[in-house]
Every structure is written in structure tokens, then in C-alpha cells.
Image: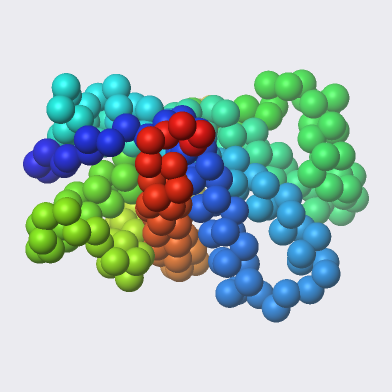
Amino acid sequence: MSAATMKEKPSALRSILAGATAGAIEIGMSRSASRHVSCRICKGCTTNIAGNSFKAAVRFLAFDTFKSLLSDENGNISGPRTVLAGLGAGISESVLAVTPSESVKVKLIDDKKSPNPRMRGLVHGTGVIIREQGPRALFNGLLPTTVRQASSSAVRFGSYMTMKQLAQSYIPPGEKLGSAATFGIGAMAGTITVYVTMPIDVVKSRMQSLHASQYRNSIECFYRIATEEGVRALWSGALPRLARLMMSGGIVFTLYEKSMDFFRWADPEKKYI
């Protein structure tokens, strides 16, 4: 990948606000598009919106921070360094947000499938897990989750920035890409991300389940899935994830870019944001 010009260094607050806004609206739009809205669903959406907003805020703050650190004195960043910034963003998001939340979520799902479910919800389930298994249980599957998030962010940001740069080469200098183009690029980045990282996601889910003890580590889990269930099992569930990440990629990147455009218009001198 060739160098991409990123001369503006957004403030941490802008990155947080733009990321949080994109994450909140993305989860709301995705759920509204896939389900009939009801009071019960809306009640559950509040937690999902807050969680997705926090994850996106961490992801974009970390990416913009690493991108600024890896840029040269002119604010330019090369393709490989963009991938490194994506790796840093994925690691940060995994440790601070994704691993704890997904570890609890997987255990809640497994508990509901058991003959005698004991966990009544997210908060109660988290308390049960901490009391019975200790705080470290919230970080079960940290390694595969971090590998998944790091690789996912590296692929997603790397492919998005590469395609964005290519698209910008076809428009006059200084002119911005339209929302439709940004959405399309984000959706394509999501598609690439799914097929590159799906095996890691499958291993991560197995290592966070209540039956994770049957595997010594993530490598053995990967090997046993491939040998006992077939290589295709490593891509099981790819189509549902593809539909979700295509929509997610298009929405998140478009909203993030538009939020940043709004902040530049509203506070060009960065006095407040």
C-alpha cells in the first residue's frame, strides 16, 4: 500500500465522540432493520447501544492515537503503518471492552441452554461469574479475542484506508468522497474482514464457552476443529456475520467521517472539541 495523507490529527475528544456516535447509531439501525421493534427489544437495545458505543469510541480513539504516533512529520502515514495502527486499535478494544462483555455474553447464552438456568441477565450474570469463578473469568479467551480484534481491526482499517485512497485518486484534489462511496468502501472492508478473520472468531467463541475446558489452548482448539469437524467448520457462521459486518462497516465509517466533518465545521479552530 502506498502512503496515505492524513495531515489532520483529530483531538481525543473528537475521536471519542465520533466513534461513540457511529457505534450507537450503527447498532440501532442494524437492529431496527433486522427486527420488528417492540418494547422488549427496545429495552434490550439500551444496553447494546451503550456497549457498542463504548467499543467504537475505544476503537477509533486508539486508531487515531496510533495513527498520529506512526505518522511522519508531515502527517503522512504509509499503508503498513496504517495496519499497525489498526492492530493497536484492536488490542486496545479487546482488553478494555470486548473480552469482558463477550465473555459474559457467551456464558449467558450457554446458561440459558442448560436444564436449570441461573443467570437472570447481564448484571446478575456478571455477579455470578465473578463470585463463582473470580474476576479473571471475565477475561477468559483474552488471547483469541485479542488476536481476533487485532487482526479484524488491522484488516478492516487497512482495507478501508487503501480503498478510500484509491477512490480519492479519481476525484479532484480537496474534494471529499460522497456518503454513498464511503458506505460502499466500508461495506467492502467489512466483507474482506469476515473471510480473513472468521477462523479466529470461531476459535474465540469456543474458548469463551462453558465447555472451553476441553481444549488446552487456542492452538489445540483450532487443530481439533479442523481435524474433527473439517476445515469448513472454521468458516461456520460466515454468512450471518457477513451480512452484519457489511452493514456495520458501511454505517460506522460513514457516520464517523460525517461526524468528523461536522466537528470541523462547528469548531474549525478546535477550541471546544
